[in-house]
Image 1 (cartoon, rainbow, N blue to C red):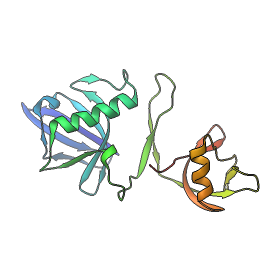
Image 2: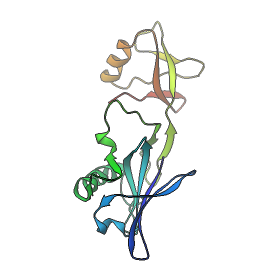
Image 3: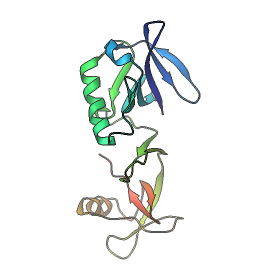
Image 4: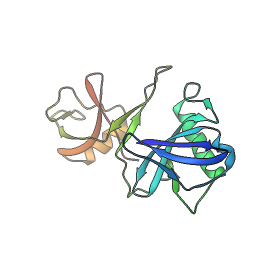
Length: 179
């Protein structure tokens, strides 16, 4: 995960890719109106930058004043309107091809004022118990939450033992279903 930073350097628009280990200038075809200090959350997959969130838009911190869903949809709209292919490849996370997997995801709760955090992709070994719709995670305490029929049907189709993305939640495990 990293940041796409759109700013000016001596009145020249500059697009930078910044992570904890890397900082470089990208050649990109974007509308110049975005370069008033705009910061996107992104992940680099080979030569493609997958954009999923916007933190600052033209020097205004919109992260604190909007929900993730609003920013996610807004980011998609910004890329559709202001990005032109040809140089650095930017795509919105919702347009990511199915054969490309990301290193992890950002997790958001529903508490007002809380921030999202990056969770590394982790696969847990899930086993079915003798009780219908009751599953455990191997080597961990708690049960896998089965909140709805869709989750139940998906888990039943997997067999008696399988690997699955799970996140710990209140002493139990929440399944991250594939899209």
